[in-house]
Amino acid sequence: MPMAYKVRTATLPLLPRRASDIRILHFSDLHLTPNKKREIADIKSFIKLKPDLVISTGDFLAHKDAVNPVIDALQELLDLPGLFVFGSNDYYAPKFKNPFSYLRKDNGERKIGSKLPTEKLRNKLIKGGWKDLNHGKVKIKVNGVVIEARGTDDAHLELDNYPLIAGKVSKSADVALGVTHAPYERVIAAMATDELDLIFAGHTHGGQVRMPWFGGSRSLTTNCDLENWRSRGITKVNDEPWLNVSAGMGMSPFAPIRFACPPEVSLITLTA
Image (cartoon, rainbow, N blue to C red; front, side, top):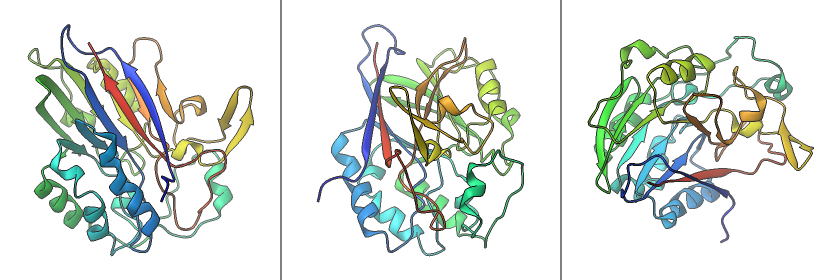
């Protein structure tokens, strides 16, 4: 069965001289339900990308019975070093709303569904060996490189509280990563103040519906206050950290349309 997703690649020279490369697999927004057999097979195939580190920026779930399918799909990846945060759909099930409302400017209103088994998912990911970065800060060593990583809980539901993890990067760290679900400007600005090197986020679905544009396509929304041109892939503004936004693998069961925006994962190679 051919893969039904795109692998977006980038190389960033962020490591110390003579350091070994680190291949980071970044995925987001699985929005998994138990019946999504094709997507589960695609997730299982991520291991073929041979990552050294795995980062998930949340929205694993779209159904109360999806925790075990998620863990099953990620089984081989859980054997690798991994970091995760949660998005709004890891706390609350999706709820029907006008699909066109997604294309309007975010007005702060949230229609949330029934509560999901968030703690069950958290416990299984931690038991699998991944680090919980929902307001966490960790140091891990990958290929001999010391990585300091910090993350926030979901900014879309205003659960982010960056001061809990604020502070300058440790002198013993070779590279500093930030992880957050929704790339709101306040989170990016706070991480920039602490001089992180690279931030990982999801949430935008790459716009989900993109219009043909000069040399490619353009998103109509990011579903947050991030500028539309930054809705997917690697971007950088001034002295801020690099930002990688994943266009995600899934979508809400109530808005199952992608146009000019295929499901994707990122493979970011950090080099010396």
